[in-house]
Image (cartoon, rainbow, N blue to C red):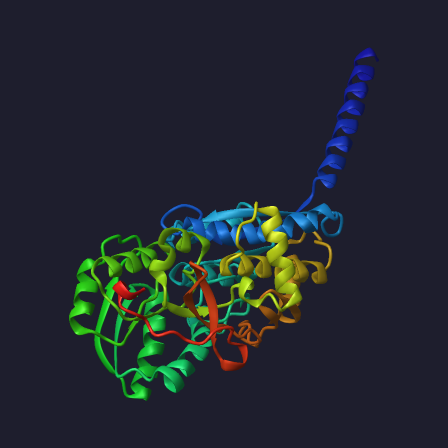
Length: 405
């Protein structure tokens, strides 16, 4: 009898403990969202900018109690800018971490691979930055993108080339990746339409630091326009080495490399360079963009909110909105993921990039980038909008020789 009493007491304690642990677990429940990005490696600071934009939104939502009384929890998958690393990281997010949805995504080559995993595993994937068209044109049903793709990004710049610049000679210095090759293809088609002569197509690898051979070749050929697509560090080194070699051209890129880190590295050495951008600081007439810029600066000690910060912010808010509209998670992981996928397809929000709505492929079609140029504004390198005319904040400036700047 005494033994039974002891066992009974033990069982009561265990049951009470289990009840308390279970209660604490319920109180600690989180909405787990996976975020892919290059958080180490050559483009880590761009991944960090995206992350900071996301954390601004997440912290604000969590400070208000989260959603369904649950806090948003971001779990990061580091691609290290490599497709194989990205695939391994996203598999962990989906299977081990059991995230409801995967956001982020920076490199196109990485995102092409990781989005295939998400589609196969029926996990919603909302891409933040990578712009290769292939990401959303494969007929996938679980893949969405809150950023314009490369044709959408380059539409305004192509119009400027055709209607304003009309170059007779052009050359290409491109990152040897899906990101660079896609832009190269689009620009090649555009300049053929204009009647420009393509003098050369040169390439480099992610992580390269010496571009003197390619720039020397460009200097020899003297193209009016030099197209170059790549990430922040490589583009900064290209600008600095072009100055060292006294090479003058109209540099044109996508513009995503125009980050705070880029301007810290090159300053006015980037003067006259052009691209396309959705940087929120250029759109301060829009109260939503202006509010984001001010809150970002307040949170990060006066830091400038760059394009990747805004894209990260928009990306995570679209995901949170879809999770909210899908309803409180049921515990059935696949059903919850399917509910979020259905909610994503019906997204309609206005954020820092503008209105976010998806077409039937999952591609945002409502965001319109603008053509920008780096100009000297009171002794500092600053991006200004130069096209289209109705949105321009400054006229286009022809590049001057280095000794006359």
